[in-house]
Structure formats: C-alpha cells, structure tokens
Length: 125
Image 1 (cartoon, one colour):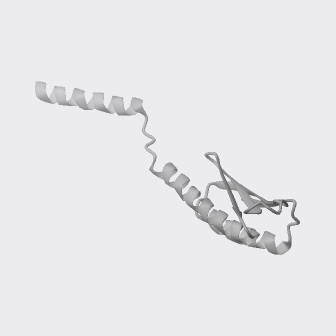
Image 2 (image 1 turned 45 degrees about the horizontal axis):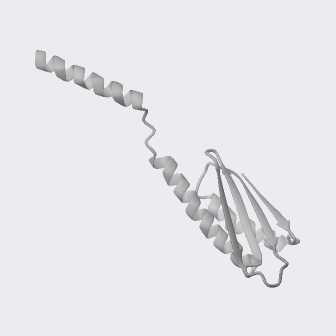
Image 3 (image 1 turned 30 degrees about the horizontal axis):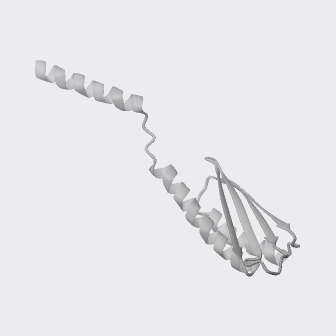
C-alpha cells in the first residue's frame, strides 16, 4: 500500500507530508484491501474565499475507489477532518463487503427444489 502526497499552489514540506501519512496511515489500518491512497493538498489564493485550504483523497481498494474532499481555514484542520471522513467511508465500505449476501439466486432455487422433492418423497412414503 502506498500513500502519495501532491500539492497544488502549495509546497509540500516534510512536516505536512509526515502529518498526512500519520493521519491517513491510521485510517488505512481499518481495512486490509486498500491498494493505495492519493492525497492532493491545494490552496485557493483568492482572499475573499472561505475554506482556502483544501485536502482531497482518493483511496483505491479492490472493489473500487473512495473519494473525499474537505476544506478548512488551515491545512492541518482540513487533513484532520478529511481523515475522519475517510475513516467513516472506509468502515461503511468494509461493512457492505462483509455483510453482503453473496448467495446466488440459482443456488437458492435449487436448494428449495431439493427440499420440496424431499418433502414430497416423505409424504408419499
């Protein structure tokens, strides 16, 4: 599993990169089928804009990808909120995969037909 950190309109320092890997790395331990995580940090340079620091993440799993985006007044705050949001989405995806009923309609119908045949044979005897 890899974690790539990229920046738009911002220079990614070692401190920011370490903070992202720490926060997002904790999230990655929740689900073992994560193949990779791409994090993009960007800054809006418009002085009248609210939430100038934007963090977005694309988490690639075996079953698809999960995308989150969050904006805040500081980069560290947006990373914190993003990590919480990603954790919720990953646990939701994990629960869907674990608790999904993967039984086929054909196998269910065949089991029911076998049970009906056994019941009929029992009644005839």
